[in-house]
Amino acid sequence: MNLTLEIITPEKIVYKDEVNEIIVETVDGQIGILPNHVGLLTQIVPGELIIKKGSSTQFLAITGGFLEVIKNKATILADYAVRSEEIEVVKAIEAQKRAEQSVKEAKEKAIERDFAIAESELRRAILELKVAQKRRKSA
Image: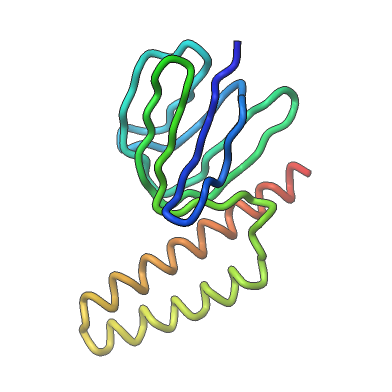
């Protein structure tokens, strides 16, 4: 028996398939979800989402959201999620550099809102690079 996983962002359905296991970072720490898991609703924190299906493992960068598990169906409503193979490393590095500059400028101007946005963009770029590097090491 498998677990059906669906990952939905405001833009699109990022993933929908049957899987053997999901490993995700929550506010209470990292958890693994297997078929026949007890019902669950939890908040996801920014990090890496690992999906195991048969002998393959996929990695996704996810910036937060919610996970609901009901009767062998796991649904993740995410702010942002991207598969490691879709991450363009050069663009992520450029985004990191832009975000670092924005953080610096926001600090100098002492604009909290701009700083929070820039810091969020920086975390996202760093997360994408981390997930992309892991995929390349495991490939």
